[in-house]
Structures are given as structure tokens and as C-alpha cells.
Image (cartoon, rainbow, N blue to C red; front, side, top):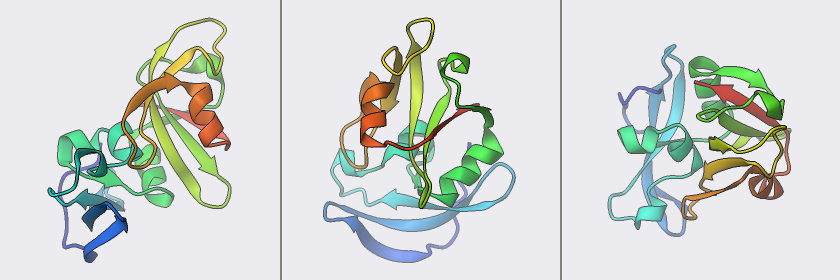
Length: 157
């Protein structure tokens, strides 16, 4: 996972939503590439402390930051995971799913926590997810796919 070494803030305290204040920092992937990350103000309510990539990649629990979407989270996935493609039958518990918006890059990530059936389908793959500043939840992949109707890729740690 990304290192917890944070450099000088890129931006001073500011809001990324009306309920979430924090600071943008630079961290580095395991291969040394810089990425932008966000660390919330301790005064934020718990659900405003992190967003999906902080949950999925474990950076919030380990280091108290979330990696930004787009190129930043893509660098982490490329440097610290192995892309296994987009075949549902190849996934297993612990894999990461990324949603690629053709214009914005990686816009969402979730963690696979259970693959309940064979053949695999959107309704029998369970994920742990957090949409923006909403609460964490466990749901089926098809529900997340409705929110993010973009191509998906699977990544193995």
C-alpha cells in the first residue's frame, strides 16, 4: 500500500464538500510515484473522514488519508496490484474493483468480500463499498454498477 510519508501540503485547509474539511498532501506509491491524498480535519463527522479509495485500499485505516480519484488511484492500482482483467469468473475475495469513466479515469473502487456462486454474476459478488461520503456498506456488485455504469477492472493484491 501507499506509504504514510506525507510531504508539505499542496493546499491549505479547504472543503471538498460542505461537510468535509481537510488538507491535500503528496504521498508515494510503493514504486515511488507521487500521488495526491486527502486527510480530513479531525473535527469532521466520522463519515466525512474518508471516501471510497481510503476504504478500499486501506489507506484510511492505516494512515488516515484517502487517495484521490483519476490518475492518483490508478497509479496505486498499477504499482501495488496486478490487473486481472474484467472477467467475473476470475475474481476472488480480497480483489479490488475499479470503475473507469472514459473521461475522468478511475472514479470508484470497492473491495470484494465474498463470491457466492458459480458462475460469477453481478448479483452473487458481494463488495464492501463507500460512495463518496455516504456510510460504508456491504452490497452486491450489481447495485454499485447501477451507481457507476462504467467499465470495470479487477485488481489482485
